[in-house]
Image 1 (cartoon, rainbow, N blue to C red):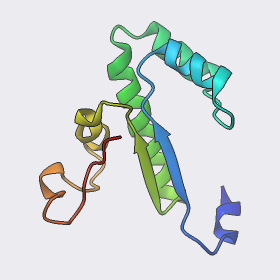
Image 2 (image 1 turned 90 degrees about the horizontal axis):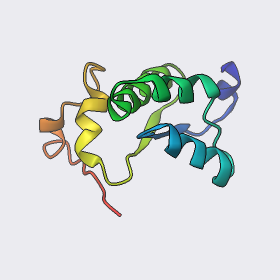
Image 3 (image 1 turned 45 degrees about the vertical axis):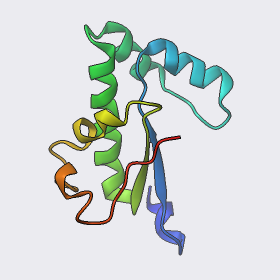
Length: 108
């Protein structure tokens, strides 16, 4: 991902919370530019709790993004309550600090 260093603007990674394998398959079929790899779909299919596995996948993506990007855009599609779980253990911002830092969770 060294090519990102060539950009002179901040790079923000979009991270989608994939709630189950069917959502991942839908994204692959209907959303241009999104490709959920088959190994991630298999993890979701084999998980006893696909939503918990989706939170883990999102957390892994945020962890990876910290190495290469200047930020992330979390898309949780109505599950904003899971943002603290996605960020848990990543030493980013504690949810209780959101208001103090002027951060908000937007809902559409």
